[in-house]
Image 1 (cartoon, protein in one colour):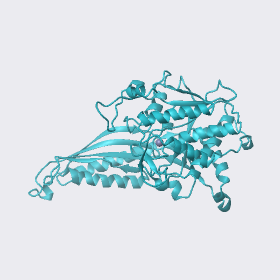
Image 2 (image 1 turned 180 degrees about the vertical axis):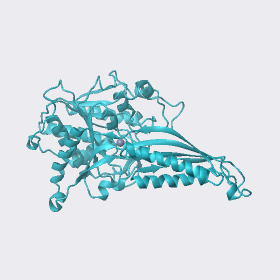
Image 3 (image 1 turned 30 degrees about the vertical axis):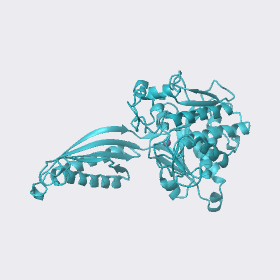
Image 4 (image 1 turned 90 degrees about the horizontal axis):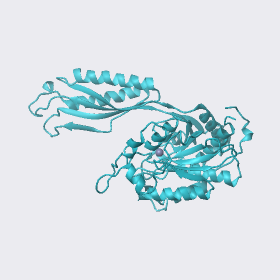
Length: 447
Ligand SMILES: [Zn+2]
């Protein structure tokens, strides 16, 4: 890619009111969990491929058609809306995210990225911008993995990382009546199992840009407006089993015990210390003990361990240190001693987004943020480079095309919650950065 003069890209903005209106219009399908008096003060329960998801899909296709886009969907029900450019032999630059939510989700996670994409196309129309190649929007099916338990499964199929049969056979885990339905059955039921292959070879992209709420507190805490996301941190998930010996709580002196729960508790504390030392994260979300009576110490304690770091090597070092510490605690710090076993559940290496996409987002963020009042008075940069703590569809598209992401502030860092919130102004700022990034990337397409 060659470099170009900044002036070659028109300085356009997405309108805050229009974006907010269209976002909330799309949220009429699946609105749930009211928390305030305003019509927009509800969360969402729009589970992938349920009736409300069908309704919002119909709405998306209608809206995109009214914007003059060509629309289609593939065998995973991924929706595509393409606005033609000057040369339509070129692959489209896609703006993508997801319209499905958690059962107790909010109005922004995923939804903002898709609605920002549609609004970017509207701004291009309103300003008669002719792009070099096509620009489009994609809604990825079942990103949340809430109803069908595989996160970002449909971008995974598109990228060739997950076989389509595996995806189609996933069965719903959220409450349902009768036999759990498969993704394929539900795609057929709502009429969104397309003919076209869900494949990056059949349907290639020039690039994929994803605008998303941060889902963490950093931008808000530091009074910043935009995160230029350079990658996604690595994580590994483990099941840990600690084996001791069950015996009577009243007749077994402390020195004579093999107490699996005590041993596990010390391991959790040790894992937390390892995380602090390396500036990483360790989390235990599930813990259980057997046999489970008040007056017997457990013979077995099981817990999950989620370990994260931005660098693969440091993540591996953290896991090694946890292994050594857990071994020591089991052998030496559990009275008569316990045994510990590890089993790997998930191994997700760090993701590094594409430098050209990051550069396009950075330039766009500088331009958009420089025009804000806070920037001129304090000469303060209102955007920062960031690493995403969570996985996204962009991790899969990054395997097959240049990709990067943009973050917007999230009130109190809360997401996957009905009260999840990003102000209309901040949403529009993020969408304007998305717009500028797409235009810059389009200008630099290889000739
Ligand atoms: Zn999301």
